[in-house]
Length: 362
Image 1 (cartoon, rainbow, N blue to C red):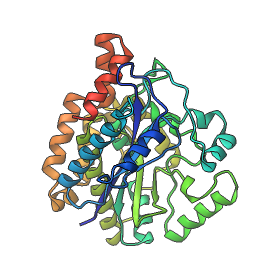
Image 2: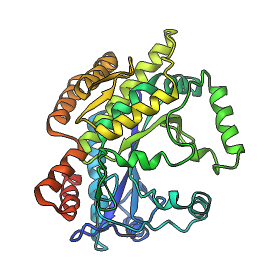
Image 3: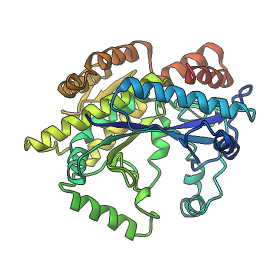
Image 4: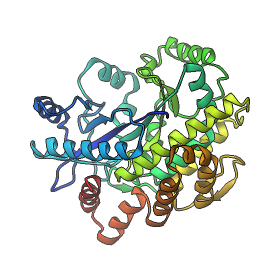
């Protein structure tokens, strides 16, 4: 069975005011001094962020337990220096992001200007094992139209700099400001994929292969396909659902490739529209159906995704749980809906943040 790993980026905030705090170095130092702590935390572009990565897992139950455990450890370390963590993809409250001082981050700040300053956004990246680069690129080619559905499910960023954006995932709109971010055309082979990446690096516009921010890419560090479209999810259970669906998509695409089925050749222009619609609507409006690229209710599109990966999820024992989790998310709402409900009830963005802190650790 294919293994799955999850990377989550968390926002460091004041537990009383909800304001982001530039304390990642102090939190990392606390984690390093804890001998019982595994080396799972990493620095990120901004000092108000903390990243962690799970181990590769075969079972979704084990993945869930690890995400919940590490979120709890992150909150504990943060609490020791007077802040806490929130699974928020953007800060609802106004913030002046603080870029880390290492050479890489400073190069980015100089190269991209205000776009770097604005990238205080937290995502959820899912790694799924593949047998080879050739299989990985075949998967990337075949999962492209389904990725916006994952973005809609995970949407958790309706506020930006103290304002209601009108988007369910405004993080994704900010993220697309990187010159290498977004959907890709069909590659057709690992050779063409690697040549495209080499050509991009050769322009000097990006620093190296790690700055190729495709929606789905071959990992530079692991034998995996890395899917990068999701907001950090408010609830650990939603992150597990996204990981479950991603593994189903990878397995389904690999089977199609081995059976000689060609990928659907939707243009990048249409895929960008599907991305935008998912960011705008989340689960509260229409999405673009991955097969037809025509408007359809979110529930219909989510059901189509479950049908598409149904055989793979059945074989891994995840189909029943995935169906139940999708139904609950459609019924109860994703992070964007929960944030908006708090705002509509209280009129306080501070309350939005503190409510999300509680959900992060539940």
